[in-house]
Length: 323
Image (tube, rainbow, N blue to C red):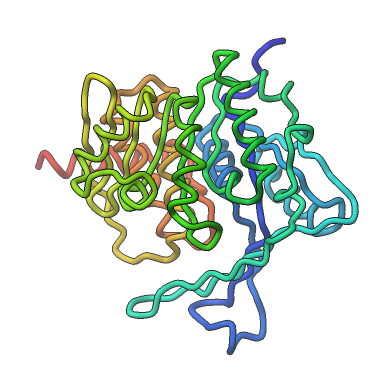
C-alpha cells in the first residue's frame, strides 16, 4: 500500500469555550467557540507547514462531534479515519485567559467523552500503515485504562512497521497524579524514536535531575529513544541523542503573550517538520522555538503559520544577530 500521509496523529479533540478578552466566566455573557486537542493541533500545524496529515479519533455522531471534525478538516487534515459513534458526548473545556498576576484557569468537562472510551478496535490501522510518522501524546493514555492500552498497541504497531514514532509526555495534572503518569508512560517511551518532555515534567514524573542538561542525558539513556527533546521554558530546548547533546536558546521572544495554550504543540510541529526536511537537530530546535513563539501571538490552540512566515522570522533573527 503506497504511503499517503507525512504525519498521522491520534487523540481527543474538545470544544474550547472561552470568555471574550480576559473576562472571567462569572462575568461573561458569551463564549468564543474553538477547538483544542494536542494531537489535532499538531496535525493542523503541520498541514499549515505544507505536509499531508491525518488525525484519528472516536467522536460522537451528533452536531457537536461533526462540527469539531469539520473544523479540523477545514485546515487540510484528513479526518476520514475518525470513527463516529451515536449516543455519546464530545469533551469540552473552558478557559479563562489572564495576564499576571492572575493565571489562566482551565475547567475540564470531558469525563466519559466518546474519545475517552477508545479501544484498539476503534483505530484505523490501515491509515497508520500508510503514514511515514505517527505522533501521540500522554494526554490520550490519561483518559482511561482502555486508552492507555490502545496507545501501547498503536505505538507498537507503528514501530514494528518502520514508521517514525514520536510522543510528547504532555502531562496534565488535572487528568492524573504525576507518579501514576510516570509509571504508566515510562514503558511506552522505548517504543518511540522521539520523546518530547518539559523539564518540569521530567522531574515530577520520572525523577530526572533538577539540572536540565543532566536530566536530558539521564532520560535518553533510560528510555533508549533515538532523540530526547526537552523543553526548558523561556530558556529554549535541548536535544539529546546517544552520542550528542544540542541546545537552542529561545531567541524569539513574544513582546505580548496573547494565548499560551498550544505553544508546546507548535514546538513539536516545528521540530518534526524540520526533521522531515532533513535539517540538523539544532536547526530543528530553532524551528520549534520559532513556531512556539509565533503561536503565543494569536488566540486559540493553533499555530496557523505557513513555512514562509516561520522562515522569515528565523532568517530575520539571523540577519539581526550578525549586525
